[in-house]
Length: 225
Ligand code: HEM
Image (tube, rainbow, N blue to C red; front, side, top):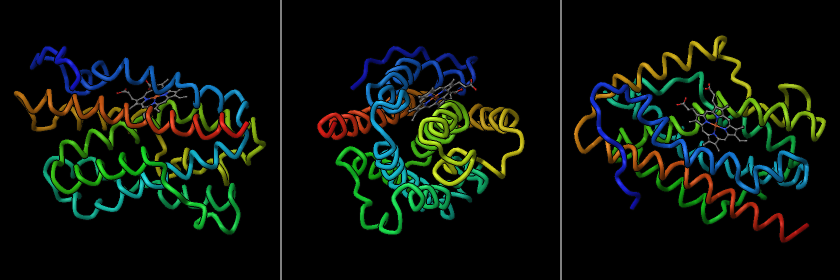
């Protein structure tokens, strides 16, 4: 269990608490060897394909309970169809992997564990689900855009087209405003007391689960190259 280092200050907006609580974990995810090697072109497009395939499991878990969570008082405000990524991921996988992409869709152990945790939260703990939602979708709207530009250049993918559709949010015309609204929803979340610490622990876990997935992807690809 991580050390409880957060002071629960009721005056600090929750969107600030969650960002600062996960700063170190964000840094670790961003600077993981796999991300660095992939985004500097050391691993080739196969690594990007395999990485995108792992995302299929994560977004399947995030999006399969949307209908049930839409009416939930805690998670409901975050469930927005503009964010849906699964259909875009499937187009990317078909482009990157060809007609047999579904047969090649295999979750790494870390991916399966991550998706299972997201589903568990979706079924039993809406505030935990929000944390996983935040970790992925707000990241996709932020640093995800760096990944898209790099991938397009490295592997000559059609700009904002097949291969990188996951990173393109056609239905969000103003990402900065969308992120602002999203943070306001975070700030309105009805949580306090020990639940805040529990939620921040889950946020750190969410980032760490991404890093673990990158480590497994890294092991697979460095072994091949
Ligand atoms: C190459 C990898 C990455 C880069 C370059 C990157 C870069 C960034 C940048 C520049 C921001 C700030 C954007 C802003 O203030 O609007 C950001 C925010 C964020 N990133 Fe990343 N990131 C990367 C990987 C990740 C990963 C792997 C995750 C988690 C799965 C993640 C989750 C987030 C989240 C949740 C935010 C929003 C923080 C907030 O404002 O509350 N990022 N990222």
